[in-house]
Length: 317
Image 1 (tube, rainbow, N blue to C red):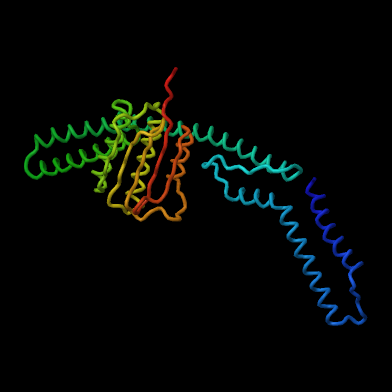
Image 2 (cartoon, rainbow, N blue to C red):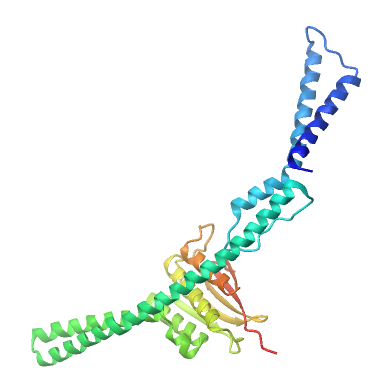
C-alpha cells in the first residue's frame, strides 16, 4: 500500500468511526447547545484527534527512522543500515537510502585511500628533500663553523662554538622531523622496532612516562598495515601530549585472534563528549583503508584508550 493510501485509510477509519458513533449513539444536540452536550462533543473530538495522531505515527514510523539515521550517519563508521519491512513507498525509500549509504561508503573508502597514499608520498618527498638538501647544507655549515672556531681565538671562538651548538640542535630537529615524516626504521627493522623508537623519542621530547608492552610473536602484516599501526600510534601519543594532560602513556602490541591489536592508553582527563578532531578522523580513515577496527573509549581508571585491531595476513594454502 502506498503512503498516500495508507494515510487516507487511517483518516477514513477515524472519520468513519466518529460518523458511526453519531448515527447510532443515543446522543442529541440541542439548540442552544447544553453544557453537557458541549463537553461530550469536545471529548469526542479529542479522542478522535488522539486516535488519528497515534495511527499516523504508526504509519509514518519508518520515515522517522530514516530521518534519525540521516542526522547521525557517519561514513567513517560503516555498516549503519535500516531494516526493510513490508513493501510500498516507505520500504522502497529505506532500500534506496541503504543502497545510497553503501555506495557512499565505497566511494569514501576509495577517495580516502587515494588521499592517504598521496599524503604518504608527499611526506616521503618532503622527508627526502629535508634529508638531502637542508640536512646536507646544515652539515656543511656545521663543519665550516668548526673549522672557523678552531682557527679563531678569544671571544670570537666562543661565539662560533655557540653558533655551532645551535646549528647542531637544528640539525637534530631536522633529522627528527625526517623520522616522523618517513619512518625508515619501519622499513629496515620492522613494526616493533619502529614503535619502540617512536615511544622512546616521544618520552625524550615530552618528558612523559611511556610504558611499552609488546608480544614477541606477532602475526605477519603487510607494509600498508604496519604503516597504519605506526601512524595511529603516532597520533595517539601526540594527542596524549597535547590534549590529555597525561603523566603516563602505555603503548602495547598484542597478538589477537588472527589479528594484531594496538592499544594506546593514557591517564589524562579523558575524551569525554569532546567533538572528534582531524586527528581522530584521520585515524578512522586509515583504519578503514586496511579494513581494521578502531575503538576510542575511556580507559579503565582514567584517561583515554585507543584500540586498533588489524587483520593479519592469511597464510597461503
